Image 1 (cartoon, rainbow, N blue to C red):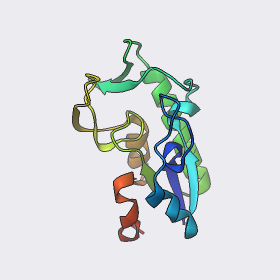
Image 2: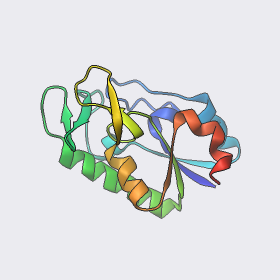
Image 3: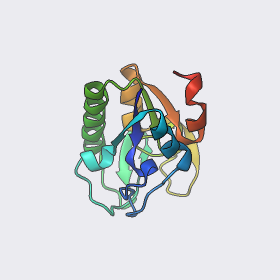
Image 4: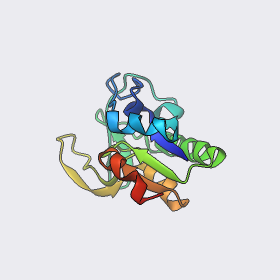
Length: 145
């Protein structure tokens, strides 16, 4: 099966701070599945590193106050395109991210607090029929296939 995966979970240094969120449970899935990496924020042309962003009132703002909603929407559309072209019906995405978080995201205060909600790309993927899992559920993927 082809699985769309946040590139940072595969060890790609595409996080806002230039690092990654390498996750061995996610990487282990490559033994039985084809992992298709995406980074909606990179797809949007945002730099690495970049000022961190969070969602507030349905819009994406960087910590320095810049409205990046348009860029995040563009990156989400490109991630959806990759998912559709690759035939991915399931995605494992970075939890709490303004792009990839699903169910819980940071609240927009840049204090580490979370709220119920979805990242821009996660929501678009979900709206188009793709099952979304956070990395903490990577070992439960068999329940969704």
